[in-house]
Image (cartoon, rainbow, N blue to C red; front, side, top):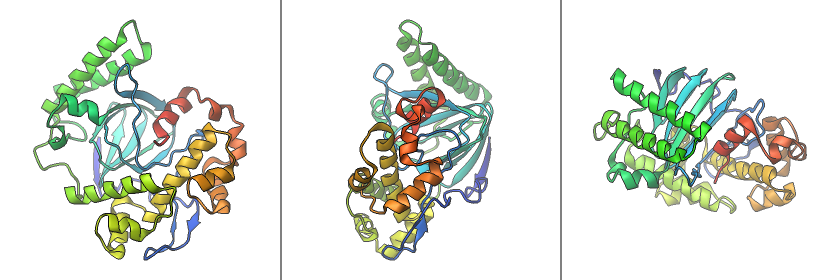
Length: 336
């Protein structure tokens, strides 16, 4: 595991792929949509806020994906997320810290940290997402706890955490009789290790964002996620956090790596992509439903991201009922 300041290890065009151009809005200049080239997967991988859907039997989300070769732009969720690199490598951006992960490395992503990933084409990544409600129930002061993003410096503790992660994945895949008992015991052991060996001293680990700045970003993201189907201006968003539009524009771009207008259209675009894969509703109706008014721009964005038209993608078997790696990654990438 290697650390880099200011996201220095990420591709030069990280967060700046030119999927489509949008005109100016309020005091923000026109900007390009942030997106990802998906080489094989047909699932939309445009992220904003991710709503983690847990499995009732185990109360968490556990999955793996491989051979992805994808970029996942900055997003956040309330869950604690732990990654383990079984094969290949990954670049991880957490707040303003860039981390290079290689085979055998793990990473802990704190609840509500803004993060992004870039994995190589021949990687296999194990993902464990533990929802906030579960954490709060078993760790009463969880809101005041932050964990190290990687190694704690003690080999035995690092090895114990990796053991738990690998066993959790193995049990989940095999699902022996009453597997939930063993799975849950390993989950508790993992959290015990995190709390006692990977907890940061109070006040550390927040990156360059202070609590007030992070709260502002989360407030804005929540606002957009609730109102994306409506007309949203930069002034509306700035008012939510009591900032003037010009300052808000710079603040958002600096901390999110994209303009506010890009963010709004990411939310809209991802909802449309999800409905394209899951419904037979006409494209025109979906654009109206999700507040996207420029059909020509949408077609261009979609074609550049998926290499096909919406109707063409709908005909692909993987889009109707994904299997294998597409199924696992689809469950990871779909919003809300």
